Length: 215
Length: 146
Image (cartoon, each protein chain N blue to C red):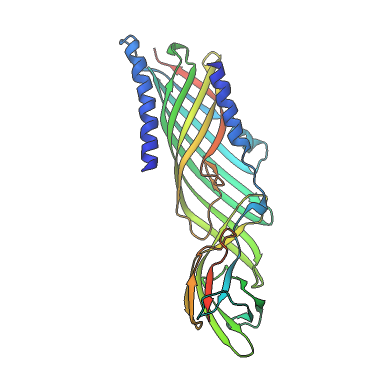
């Protein structure tokens, strides 16, 4: 109930903001201004530079008068090891809307706040040897059909670099996470969300994007 | 607007950087804690048991005139029978549980706890489940009365 109230409150603030502005603006506006497609270079760089995480993420955004429709799709593979081996791999997507506060939409710049619904499908496995008083036991556990969903509050900034080439970052605050499909092994990583040490998570993503303006 | 963005960045960094854990702050326990009580007075009772798993000669615990004992549980199984042995008395206690593995932090060994702890049968006069999860924050899991 508390979760539904929080989401309702956020949505009402979000749309209330836009309504106030739209009343002030001229009514004769185009519906769609541009489309942007891009790649998350922070996630891509982690793969290129030999991190334990292999990740890729693409983003597509459709710019409207005051809102942007945004869709992300990514894959992620984590290999963690110490006295154990933990592997986690899967894919995720996010979709939602951003309220763009840039007044001149024709330049393609973005300064926005947005909400996302996100979902991940993944699997994980743990190999570990433990002596808990019963001799050394080799533990091999896996979850083959895990899914998770969460919500995000995003702050986005995109600026024109050259021609139709844009770049910028997104700050994400991720909350209301729910994981299903766990058995004896409790999952540590959720693709797209991060680790599960905290109920909520934050992340910083940097995007390179190509803009297709609509005439 | 610049101040608002700076404030947002600062808050974001503060939240992100607070995410530091130590292995010792993991409160999970790999064993259950049993306390001994007098069946008539219900008060704590010092007892000296030799404790074995049924069918095994490996001694798990020796409650050497103590009020409580910590007993490990088998992570490859979901039930276990313990034999509590003295020179004059023998008791058995069969418990069920669900092992649960997780990574508390990637720098630590995997964490093992047991949840859903319950007694299946016992030859003690009575037993009481106090905490169904093996966790340092719980002082005990099972009380046995005899």
